[in-house]
Image (cartoon, rainbow, N blue to C red; front, side, top):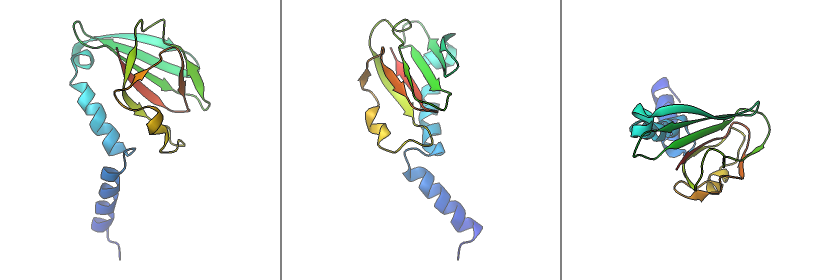
Length: 130
């Protein structure tokens, strides 16, 4: 028999276990808030289209960050070479609700990524440092 206490414990347990849970995504993003670029760095818009919203946070003498979100219902391919001159590193990737878990393997954290050819599925969000 499930009571509300047991149900809440099961929900929390599932949130802790799942890499894609709201709880774990929130925990990772909170870590980024401590970075100087997010705390007090400058803000500028990146590429913005009907399908994409992106912005850059940058503080002097610290890594800059590009946050890009596919806000459409279709897969898009993005070229950020006008915004990022050198290579970029994946800081975090948030899959869309319809993506299989295997998509996380395509965007491993701390790996380098080609900035001129990034595919984002619907509702994907990627955070890059450069």
